[in-house]
Length: 123
Image 1: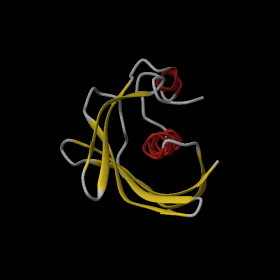
Image 2: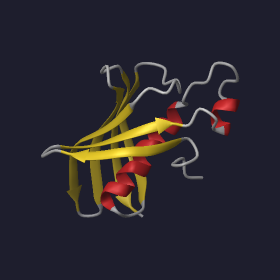
Image 3: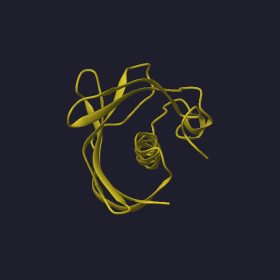
Image 4: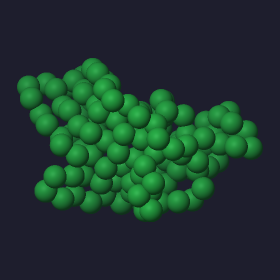
């Protein structure tokens, strides 16, 4: 199941010379939040990784599979409270059929929720 439109939706995309930034909105009424945890919803770490993968697939305009995750750090609990969330992709490198990047999930106050070093292969 894709998480886009089920757990989050894209509200904006911007690019700089060295980064691609997605603004997303977490969908508090998602069934995932009803299960994890009722009355105190938290975005599961695996869902944060999947969000990064799905957004990278949009950047690359192709289906990707995770090859390796390195230095995955969940720093703060990501709670769907209507805050503006950014998923920032730095250092996207492409080599043959592999794509690597560093994804950071944070809010407008620079509270960092996760840092993910993602290495993928073209599916």
